[in-house]
Image (cartoon, rainbow, N blue to C red; front, side, top):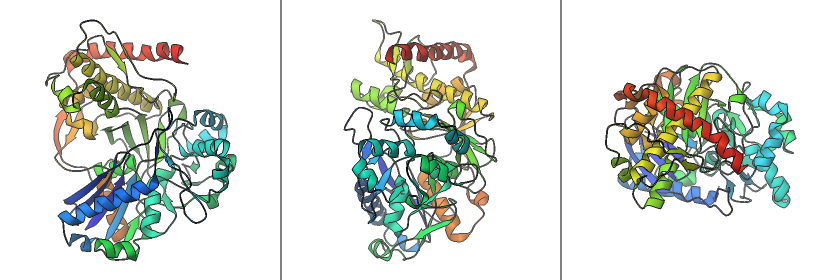
Length: 484
């Protein structure tokens, strides 16, 4: 057996697979996000440990005795979080999460230093780790002075699991401290943020061994002590390993809390001006590009909360057939936007509202707005040198066939729906745990799932969608002008 642990923003998932990569079972525990000030987003790392314990306990209870067969563990997790530890590995403050925008001024200052884009291949976004440390230095200097180690969220779990300070390339590429082309820490970039390499974890590839399970935890869970823990991957790279999106030209669209258009690359192809992320993949000598939407299913969840209707109820009201855009537009910038705007201050909006605007029209506009945000990412990927011919859909929002039809039509690309199964980040993490434990060929392990269905663009609505997309594109500068 092989165990994948995925530390997400909303919960921890523990997934057990066998040697044939059949999913045996899973456990889950929820997490909450603290927002003490506008634009802030934090979690207590102790809650991650509690959730991991609960997820594994649920898995153990439903599959008694089977954890004894685990031979490898893989980790994945939410990226960019700043987990600050003192010299005794005690947490100094709540972790500042990926969707926290407090460090926008610090990010802009770092981004103005040409070394950051040159070495990392990326804009320094407010959500990245490096500007958060500068914010802490500027606003919480007593805490900054005590920082002995900076860990990403999943690597804090690794510290608890193994006692080791280790990270890997895909997650570390989102810190603004990694030389992404050379796959190593940059002393110049660390110095620019008043840090040094001693405060960073050591680095491995995602497929390599990176620590071993402590005997105390092994005994508690009925597992063998010393089981290898793989380097693992950041959540999107782990999902790509789970989906088999590891070869050049392969791509997926992820409809989760945030949205991602992810493309695998066989070479390092940076183009930071497009606001596309260019990161290391979870496999050696492989990179990826991705456009990121900060509020994907979060946009529908927001509408669900204020309308008092479940997200599934809202999409069901639309029926099955894709409808032409109504003239009501939605910008999904509820917490700013990454690709293509790199704008932490912009906020969402509805435009075109009238007396006759119904709840279903608002739902339709939200789904279209997210689809058009993916179109923005597709355009940005094209500017970065990546052309896609089809994408595979993953994430909770992909359960809505209406939404997938809207995305296919907005992108002008077929969207493949995988056969029933769990191919997300926890599955990818389990695959990486298998590779680290057995030395198996990553390309033989990280294969693509069978396709259950393909959603084609609705040709009859392509012109209407093109017009609505141009209206959507015109709204950002107009809204920005009155919110700056």
